[in-house]
Length: 198
Image 1 (cartoon, rainbow, N blue to C red):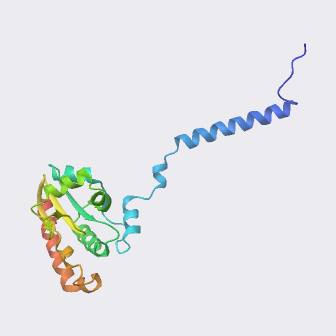
Image 2 (cartoon, rainbow, N blue to C red):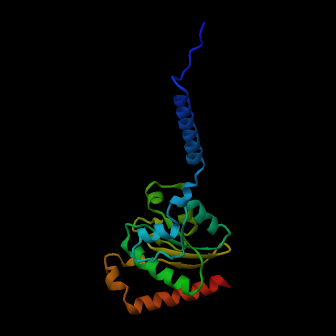
Image 3 (cartoon, one colour):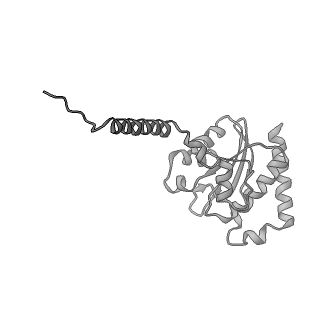
C-alpha cells in the first residue's frame, strides 16, 4: 500500500511550514506584547478630560480604596471631582499650577461620581470619615461635592477646600475665577502645600 502525502509537492510543504511559523511568531508577539505602553498616561488622560490643564500635570488617577488608604494613615493630596462639573476644570488648573511651583510631584485625582450614584460602600466610608468637613444638605445628609481638595499628612487632614462647591447657582466659573479670587486660592494652596512638605 502506497503512502499518501498531505502535500502535493515539496514546494507546498515548505509554504505551509513557513505560514505555520509566521502564525506561531505572531501569536507569541501578540501574547507577550506590553499593551500598557499603548494607553495614555494619567497626565495625558487628565489633560484630555480637563482641557484647561496642561499635559505635563501632576495628577494620578486613584479609586475609592486608595483615597481611604490616604485617610487611614498615609499622606497625599486628593482632588475629588468629575468631568461633568465645569468648576473642576478651572480649579484643577490652578491646583496644578501651584503644585508645580511648590514642587509637589503628585496629586491624586478621584472621580467619585459613579461611586456616589451607586452608593459604593468605600465611598460612603470616605464621606463618613470626612463628616466634620463636609456640608450637610437640607435633609441632614453630608456628602462630598465637586470640586473638593483634601490635603492629608500621616492620616490627618491638614487642608480641606470645598468652598467653590457652595457657589453653584450664584456665579459661573468664568466670572468667579478672576485675578483676585485666583490669587487668594493660590495663597491658600501655597500655605497648605508648604505645611504638607514639612
